[in-house]
Image (cartoon, rainbow, N blue to C red; front, side):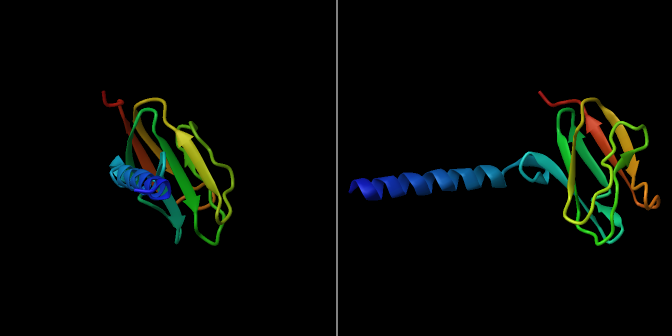
Length: 117
């Protein structure tokens, strides 16, 4: 086998392993964050379960501005225009209800469990 062919084989094997690892990522996470989409005047999914230390990323795909504000004040995105994102890493267990301060009927909740060992 030539050196060029060997290098190409190693590249393909490395890419294949990376694709398999990303496809096997638990919880349907996008990269290192659990995604929540803001669109059509709602959060999708409205309820999310994560572990302590996990990050949730909200992405506004709606034509209107929205916010992501925890009822207990633990996180607040400020205004998110279309295409903007907000990330928050949860540091303690519990259920964290949130809403859009501009459209209070838009609600969601993050349930945070202890980190698995």
